[in-house]
Length: 225
Figure 1 (cartoon, rainbow, N blue to C red):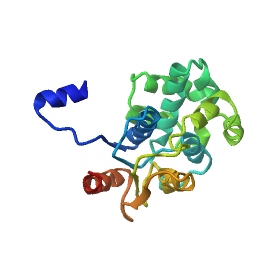
Figure 2 (cartoon, rainbow, N blue to C red):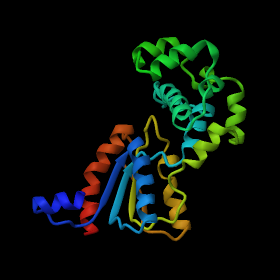
Figure 3 (cartoon, rainbow, N blue to C red):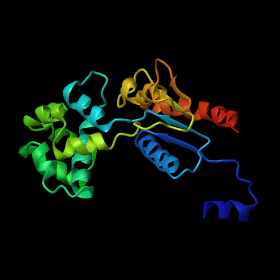
């Protein structure tokens, strides 16, 4: 259908290029993997602040917080638990992750009955204080239904056939540089296509990595024509 639209508009197709940021970069990675599995060529891809390993990302947020972390990361954990319960048919999951005294407020947040501004004063500032005590142990083993699913949803463990740049910022308050560039070393070790970690700068935060990537990837894509 997209090719038919382009043809109808008189636009010549010059190949497929993929771009994504943050959650969108995870989707871009998964989409690219699917396209490659179907032998549909992608000329190049570029992702910024890429959550390549969701298990690693959430366990880092829970177990090793830093002063740089965005205050709203707790909201992301809440959305993860409720959405996984719904989409992966794991009823009761939020009740096994979130402490009982915060469950009602978190449920309203997921249901869009309240926003982050209303939720924030009702929950602890630290994610470790929001979740139940055994969650730390469960996250370490990573073998229960929730953490196993997070591990399965990695977005980098294949031998990529597409040249890709991964943008990261030093002060990203959401995506640690290690996570954002995880695919680079893996792809290189597997003998895949060109994979580059591109530093967006010392003052590049989560949005800064995106802006830098948008500016840089046009030249990158043009070089692959």
